[in-house]
Length: 237
Image (cartoon, rainbow, N blue to C red; front, side, top):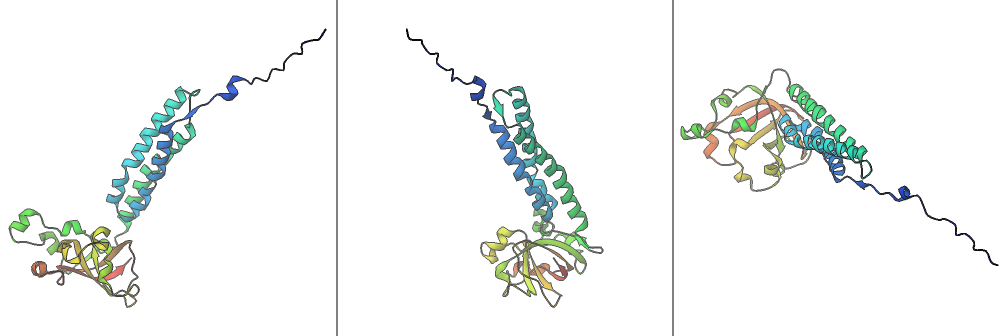
């Protein structure tokens, strides 16, 4: 009489096949956290640029916290708590550290004895234009005085890439690199004359210029070859 051999039990414990979905919110928080670190690059240019990036770390914090609590409440169904925490940490570091760094740059970038100004301050308001004043009064008062201003070198305003002694500084790199120079508003450009015999090297990055400002309001109607604003630059960085 044959015996029936018992069939070995090859089943596995069910929990060995348990699957937990990776939280999409955690992934989003991680990506937002990584992008948030761009605030440090923006902050090296200006505090205003850093402020424009702040929605990223705020979103990283909000999405990361929401995902972390959701994963914690459903540990058997969701994974990705570490990624969510990474997004939270990067959001906190970027928001606090990025704005702190931007503030430090803003406070320390102007040399002693120079007054900060900007292309936004060069532009007259509608009332001033109606009165026939192409330059705001407070900017005219800076004529012949040491100022500090930031902007970008327009590439078609230079003849060489190294040892540049004269160039147009413009408000942003969109105006710097694209379009007809004649269409750039007179208050969005500044003629720079570098006093250093070595000149400066061309770069698409932001330039920080310290020097003596000269204002010629009557040039506002004479075309692009006659700058309203120019600066004798002692320091170009």
